[in-house]
Length: 431
Image 1 (cartoon, one colour):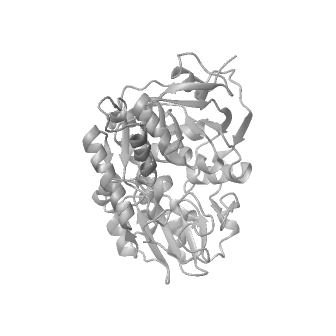
Image 2: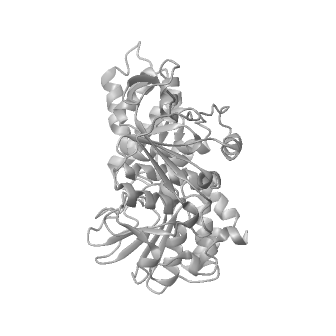
């Protein structure tokens, strides 16, 4: 009997033989991440377990990154003091640390070369599924779990069942991985893949750039997926090499692997999608809701704050102004992306159009910093990953979710808009 990618990676880290779905394994973790919204519990647990004692050791602490991205910048004294504690811990134990403005955990870990194909990576955030874009098993855990990783290098896992999703055909110009994930949510429903791994394959995946592949794996969290894994190819290897990652150990599913479900999507015919207010799985084609007025636009987050997303927005808004009454905020996913966008002149284009640019971080997405709050009855169009009521700080506002291209086109017209209907709606065609 063959095995899936998830079964192989977990098995490789728990004795060397492929595991089977449903099996409980204790696996060696290659790398771990803890961000500032979960660090407090982790550091308290380490103290509880005996930090400060003469024989106390954290042998795997240097393979655990501390990321200050949610409270970025810290909005209160408690958050500021958590940051102080994280910096002191990193200084004492030698952990890699990414400070305020360096970027979002799911972006800085791959950029920092901390993972490669075949790795097992855990992080204190559900969107740790992002690492599957690099053929790694990435999954979310709690802060206390990361404490265990720092001490032992191991965690226990129940090997998940896997859903195989075949994407046939390259996406149309103006359609992106965001639209694929929203379509998946319309088919399976929010949390419709709870504690299952997703395995994305097909020509539609092969045609995607790495930025889009990261969106594909990242957004699987809204489906409840334990992991979202892609096969590795030359694009994967080149990206990892450029970021000084370790030599890849690519893992591929067997032809006779067992899946709980197989889904085939004709991605060549998929139109842009949008999730309506309060429900990430209430998804329709953009063209069905073009009479929906919007007042606020957000491009960014760990899902769609990468360079290609910012390029999309700049291509649409170049030489133009936001619609009257619309405000727009752009939050790049990392400092490296921020600098690249500056070098390409993208922020000059967006700022001239009327947008504001925030430092890299998660604070805007989850409204921790309070920088981005819509008024009562206002409608936000966002490239983020969640739109439940009150997500951006006001339960009396609405949040609609779409690709960065959809967001930019909508900010230009003042209504939910298909980016393909405006000039510049496919920056790739002009590149």
